[in-house]
Image (cartoon, rainbow, N blue to C red):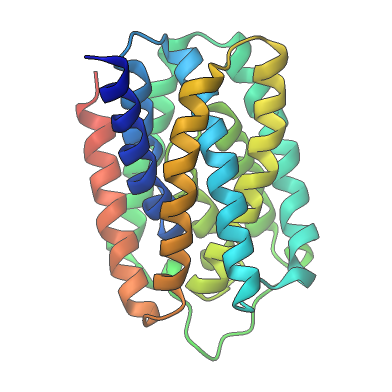
Length: 252
């Protein structure tokens, strides 16, 4: 594969992943294989992928804020546990063997798919439900800590875990939950990226090409999220969870 074709692949893959990650999760199941096409080791691909996630998250946060769908008063108490978990997860990823990546990804994706299939209301609160504070929900706090750890460790599919904590445990509607999800992803991915940069694992040029496509995809995804009914987002989330589970199961 020529270098030009490879960068075009990264651009398109980043675009699709930006849409998927903003509306649900699992986009890294596309971007990680794309990064490894040129022979990147899994740990380098895992680190480089974070460049696209950071820029994609910045684009999505700006979009949700511009449309008044980001509840800023809830950001700090939701963000802090994910930052702690993200730092621990990234440190674990640096020292843990690569063989742990797939079992963690597979187990998490299958668990999320089963939860959403068995009880869709977990990620689709009723319109009149009042969101809970993190201090009022031990389950929400535990979910945010695990989401941060998982995101720092492997990233792929972390959106599903964050939505389970923010929409499921804390009962935010899916639009605002997605807005909070991307700002959490931005926070702990920045922490993880810094650790990977210090460890010399980031390939910057492929990462930045991926980021351009991801930013464009995230921008369009925000416009879609605020214009459709919550039930459409719920079914999109369900489909993407099943797809992500299948991708994790079939990956080498």
